[in-house]
Every structure is written in structure tokens, then in C-alpha cells.
Image (cartoon, rainbow, N blue to C red; front, top):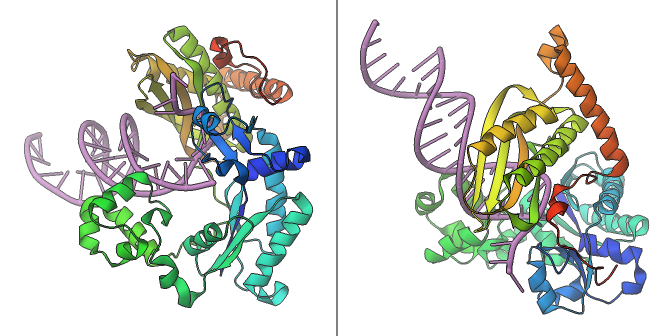
Amino acid sequence: VILHVDMDAFYAAIELRERPELAGKPIIVGADPRGRGVVSTCSYEARKFGVHSAMPISEAYRRCPQGVYLPVRMELYVAASHQVMEVLRRFTPLVEPLSIDEAFLDVAGCEGLFGPPETIARRIKKEILAETKLSCSVGVAPNKFLAKLATELGKPDGLTVIAPDRIAETLDPLPVTRVFGVGKRTAEALAALGIHTVGQIARAPTEMLRAHFGDASTQHIQSLARGEDDRRVEPHRLPQQVGSERTFDRDVTDARLMRRQLLELSGLVGMELRRHGYRARTVRLKLRTEDFATITRSRTLTPPTDSDRAIYRTILELFAKSLPKLPVRLLGVTGADLVHGPDEQATLFGPPEDVQKVARVERAMDKVREKFGRTALKPASLVARPRGKRSDS
DNA sequence: TCTGGGGTCCTTAATCTA
DNA sequence: TCTGTAGATTAAGGACCC
């Protein structure tokens, strides 16, 4: 028995909690409405105007100029997230956070302690509300996919159960995009095959799907469409990559400026790796040009690293061999292929002296960043337009 | 004046290696 | 020693999710 818990309009709800006088107004959390960026989250009032997550913020402003536009205050949301996860862990240790605002719970065997799943769901909603003043939606079902789907069907502030004997009738009429992993592109490809509903995917010839979507995707999509999902709840998943990327306020042609941005991003990635005790085997450069074309260039390092310097040096090499002709819109740095745990070579032989020196400097930098905030140095701001006050704050 | 930033997972092609 | 092949690994790109 799986529960899925998803907070309602999470960022917007937290901002509203902090500023109750905004109650009833359309709240849009995201980028500055006069700049580049998108909507992170918006309240249900704002959704009535057709505003939604991931929409260009300029478009949101056109649709809802009277909205209250607020910047993202991540620290606040992270704190609330921790609080929520703590509540969930009181019911079972099998809690798998899926993102900042949602989680799966495996509550099989918890009936003795807390009652049937529906009762647990009700208690979770009650306790989260009492302790965070935030509402959430909960789905109860025999597996992850169905639990998440149940949550969506009940939003906001819902509690939805999909019983084993109601799976097909619930699933069949839904549009294909309700299947986790089926987005716009796949939906278009399915539509071209005359497939529009989940039931149609379930009954489609597997061979036909394979020809279009490959082995893994077909297996995934069709199983889910049939309500089958045997993925377990994994409470201790490790991250696969750590990255940082930034879109310039204006597209940039100055390579010096780009390198300065890459230095900052490399530092952020290094810091994040050190914070968790990871080292990256692969360093990846991401570059998006004016025309929104995105290229990535990567290199595998031996030994893996968590050093700003080593990352930056690699990034510079990659950058040098991929200098685009068009103005650059975004730059990103990612460490991937993460290895966890101590560096065996360093443990055995001790790191060379210069490496130790660099490591000391980088640890000192971490402290400076901690004190003045991650964005103490922000080359992106060098090209920022002078901007007035936000409409709101 | 469209289109963020944090990720996951999959596919494909090239290259390396046993 | 030469050649073919299976299987890993690397690199790049893309779809998708919150």
C-alpha cells in the first residue's frame, strides 16, 4: 500500500502563509515579470487566469497583470519541506522524497499502529496542516504510479483512494499525458498512431509501440497504462549529478565574461560536491545560444574530483573547443557520475601538497559563501539591466 | 520580449578492450 | 599475429518531471 503526498501550490502557499494579507489574490512565484524567466508556482486564484508553472513570466504578466509577483525564496521552502518530511517519517521510515514538495510512503504493515491507509492519509493531512499551516493532497493506491495519479485527481486538498478493483475504470478514459513519463512529444507521437487515452495504450500492440518508442520506454509506458508498477519505495536515494546553470539577463558575446561566469558556476558545483562528500567522474559544460539551441560537452576525469579548480580547468578546455558563433544565453556546469565516500588514493598515500593547498583555499571559500550567500559573486549581474523596484516588494 | 534551474532516465554512436 | 565480435565505457542529445 503506497501513499503519495503532494503539497498544494507549495511556494505560493508558503508565501501566503507569511503574508496573510494577500489572501484571495492571485499569487505568482517566479522570475521578475519584466525579465527573463518562468513561473515557478502560482496560487489557484492565478490559475483561473490561465497562468501555470513553467509559463514564461512575461506571458503570465500579460494574462494576469493584477497578480502579485513574488521572487523565489528557496530557504523558506526548504525549511517547510523538512518539516513536512519529518511529519511523514513519524508514520513510517519508508519515506521517499520525490521533490521538494512531494513524497511516497510505503505504509504496508502500518495498519496495526495507525489504522487503515485512508485513516493514515487523513492523519497526515491533519498533522501537516497543524504544524505547517499548509494543505496537501494525498493519494492512496497499490503502487507508486497509481498513488501519484490519485493525488493529482484529488487536487487541491484532496484525499483520493484508488482501490485495486477500480484501477482499469479509473485509468482507461484518462488522456495519455497522465502517464508519468508521457509528455508533449510522446503524446504527439501517440496521437499520430490514433492513441489518445491510457486505455488505448494498455491495449495497443506492444510491437507497434516498440517500433516507435524503443524497448525501455514501451515497457515503462505500457505497464503504467495497465496500472502495473513494481517500483519500490526507496528512502535513501543518492543524487546522480550536481549542477548549476544561469541564464544571462542579456545574451552575451564576450568570452571573458562567459569564462567568469563559468568560474562562478564551477565553484558552486565544487562546493555542493564537497558539502555532500561526492566527487564527480564526469564534468559537463552546457551552453545555450540565442536561438535556444543547447549543446553539452563533457569529459571524464581520473581521478574523480570535488575541486573547484579541477572542475574549472576542465570546463575551460571544453569551452575552448566549443566557442559558439552566436551570442550565448545560458551557461551551465555539472558534475556527474558521482562517487561517494573517501578518495582511496588520497587515503593511502595522502594527497600531494599542492592539492592540499587548493583544498584548504576551497574550504575557506565555502565559508565565505556560507556567510555572504551563494550568490555573493554573481557575474550574471554584470550584464543586468538597471532595474527598478519590483511591483511588489 | 517567449521559453529557469534543479534534476532523472533513455537512446544512439563512437571508441575501447578482452 | 591477425581478425572478428561482444560488451563496456564515453559522449552527446533529448524527453520528461517538479
